[in-house]
Length: 78
Image (cartoon, rainbow, N blue to C red; front, side, top):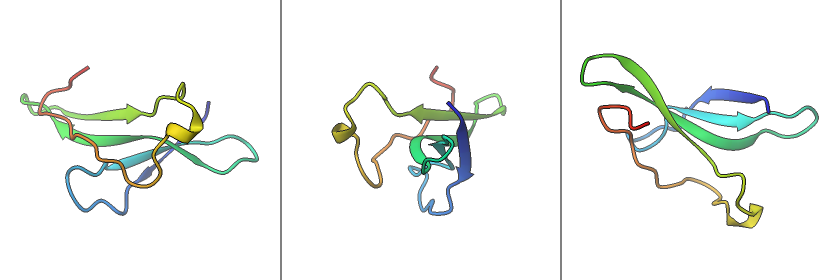
């Protein structure tokens, strides 16, 4: 799978991701597959955390439009 990551130009709150991840296959439209947030650990280290959509779900179960998401805590959770 090839991916393309774009800065989220529609970010209005911290709950919105900083970057959006899209799947890129030759000859097909881009498909949103995940999101990334910029963060800083309690020790001051910059990091990115993210969410990748579950591809095992049937296509009809994926939500369209904006999702309600949790922002990462101060430390990386994975």
